[in-house]
Length: 499
Image (cartoon, helix red, strand yellow):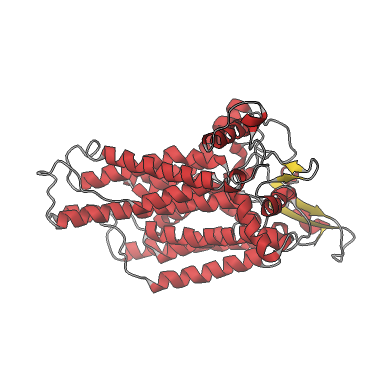
């Protein structure tokens, strides 16, 4: 086998790297402390906690959401899995602040862990992987959602897990091709491609199904991720020397993708088990209640389909104005963050005090997202780097569909809808930071190269320190610390847009 083929199919060395795991452990520990410390405060429900923790507790009692006002099943418009995850914390700690926020804190901490491992897989650099985890750890947006009982942190976690599984599937597929060539497979003589069971792709189907079982908006990622899988497989076959790499094996690619989506559908339906096994869920017997036939299994699925139709109509028709609604073009600019909590009660040693939890991304980090996406696009074109377009694909999948619905329907939207795109935006920043630290390929070795590396390292270190200082400055409004009113006011950099 030619050496050039081996290099084209090579992937990250799979040997255990203790230093990468040491960095992972340190950063994840810091992230966990920030997300769990004082998790039971403030007391009471904040923002949409009036919905999801109550639904979760009712699901523990009845198997489905319950409406106390009518003493019957509640009509809800999001799938059950996120609420079941909240219910896990309530099962352990009870129906209280710690109970209903515990699972979101776990999910937020796990996101940091998985992002570090994905970054290490992509960049082959302990430093860049650590920076990726540190940037997410020090992001106020992710921190607030990790400490609040909303659903969005779960969809962010499962979409990130899906992307990680797809990256592993890419490596697995290329390694299996390399192994086949080493064993004597000759693409010139054998028209069929080797059978490669994509275990990681199937795992991605399961995690993607879990994401869709939290919120339907996860489905936006389906065509983008499917395109990534096909492109990566075609590239692998081309690297292996297969003639017509697009047509060769494409039926297998599509077949595995269909199985992957079949698993996702199965996971999604399984998340509705509480609704299926009870008789009193909302629309559970819609057909029978309206005098229509309701055969076993099929009738339940048709009733669920009607439920989904009604929920879809609700989502597409949601145009009611809200104080903290925002448009997708405002999100990365922090144009309209969401106030989750506000109080002026208590003693802070000043004539007037304020305590707020503001869903605000760490400004220096978030205001670098757009330049990073621009640079990522350039590097992706100039370097033809698969990592650049993979990261860009995730960012586009998490952002672009919302622009469409904003223009088409004028739907009511909130900044927390961007949560699934956040890991990809951070990876875009890390990619660019890595490029800054890496000398151009054409630069001669020696003093010039070392100087460039030193300058790049200083620039990157300065950026990370500034993000950390910015996070520390805004930390009180991420966790609801009681401040003198003037101290709170000076943190509202964009004035009325942040109030």
